[in-house]
Image (tube, rainbow, N blue to C red):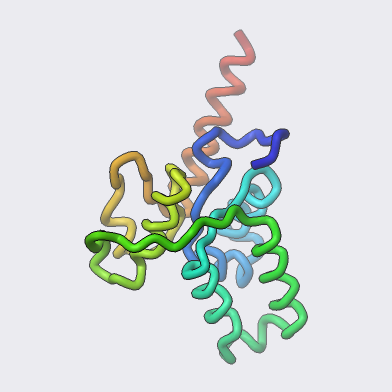
Amino acid sequence: MRADSRLPPYYQQVVVDTNVIISAVLAPRGIPALLLKRFLREGQLVFSAATFDELNTRLWRPKFDPYFTLEERQAFLHAMASSALWCEDIQAEGAWCRDPDDDKFIAVALAAQTTRLITGDADLLCLDPLDALRILTPRQAQDELALLSDCRSASADF
């Protein structure tokens, strides 16, 4: 977590699903990209070995060859890994998600005690909220951050 962060405390360490990270890389001007850049600049992404392995595995698929060189993928994955907060993979006593493959994102969020998971996956979004964990789309996260920024600006005027 960076000391100069302007992110609210509950966004300073955040879990971002693989689908959002890949969307950010494919559309560098879209909402996922803007969020990812901000999280990397002002906060910290949280990964476990399982969640990072999913990102790593997906980015090396041949369908992404037209979009990224091998060197760009290596550099991107290295940057993600070196700036991340790493948590141990935990075994869940039960399943949270309709798709058991998505449970790893809930597990890492709970292990790191984060309160935000950003995803575009309906199987995760339908669980919001899960105790103190909010599971939001990139748009919902952007809207929440914009609202909080507006509130800070308004309170500074008084």
